[in-house]
Image 1 (cartoon, rainbow, N blue to C red):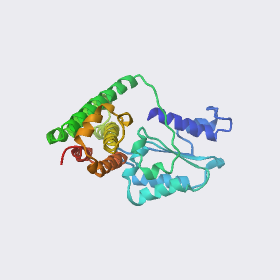
Image 2: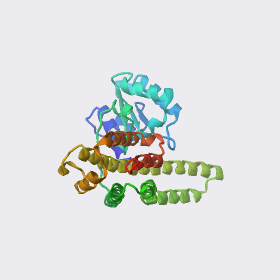
Image 3: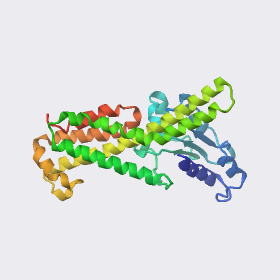
Image 4: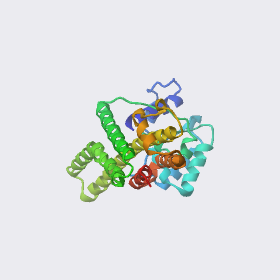
Amino acid sequence: MKLLFEIAINFAANINCKKDGCLECKTCKTILKGKNPNLYVLEPAGNSFLVEEIEGLIYQMSISSVNNEFKIAIIKEADLMGSLGGITFNKMLKTLEDPPDEKCIFILLTEDIDAIIPTVKSRCQIFNWIFNSNGSESYNEKFIYIKNEVENLLKSIISDRKNVFNALNFSIKVSNFIPEFSSEIVKEQKKAIEIVRKSGFDEDEINKIIKKIDSNYERKVKKVTNLIISYVFDIIAAYLEDIVAAIAGAKKEALHYKDNYNIIIENYKLEDINKYINLLESVRENKIYISNEINYEIALDKVILGFVQS
C-alpha cells in the first residue's frame, strides 16, 4: 500500500502543479506532505471506514476547490468500502458515479482488485501496478506452494468422489496456509507493541496506541487471508471449468489441467453439467464478495462437497 500511495500522492501533486510536476513548488510540497486544502486522504479505522469520515469526504468534495485546482480524494484500502452498506454506501456510489463537478478526482487504492465489489469497480478506470521487493521471491514461492497443494487436494477429491471426509478436510487444509503467510505480520505487530510499551507514555495512551496497532495488523492479516482464498477460488474455478468442458465434449487439449481429462470422463456425467455450471457461478460470486465478511470455510465446504458423489 505504501508504494501505491506514493504513486497516488505524486500524481495528485503533478496534476495541480503549474510547473509540470516540479515537486518543489508550494503546491507540490503541501500535497506531498498531505496538507493541501484540495487533498483529502481517507483510510479505514481498523477493518472498516467510519461513516462520518465517508460523509466528510463527500462534503469536502462537494465544495469549491482552492485556486480553481483539482480536488483529489485518495482512498486507501478501498476494498473495505463494501463494508459500509446502507445509505452511506449508496451516497458514496452516487458521488463516484456523478462527482459534484469536473474538478473532482477520486483515487481508490487496493492491493486486491478482486476484492473491490462490482458496483464500485464499474465506476472506475483501473490501473494495475506490480512492484518488485526483496520479499517478493519468498512471497511467490509461498503461492507456488499453495497452488501445488490445492491442485493435489482437488485431484485427490475428483479421483475419489466417494470420500466425503477428504472433501470436508479441504477448507481446514486451506486455513492452515494463512498462519504461515501471516507470520511476518504477527512479528511486526509484536515488535511495534513492544516499542510502544517502552515509550514512557501513560497507561491509557499506551492502550489506545496498542488498540490501533492491533486493528491495523488485523486488517493486514485479513487482506492476506482474502488474497489466499481468492487464489484458491481461482484454482477451484479452473477445475470446474475443466469438468464442464470435458463432459460437454471438449478435447483434452482444451483443459487447464490436461492430466485430469481421463479422471473427469470416468467420474463425471453429462446429465450433471448444470450442477457444475451452478457451482462455478457460486465460486465466482464468493470470490467477488470475499471482502464482505463471508465465512470462507463454509463457502469452500459447500463448493467442494459439490465435487463428490451425491
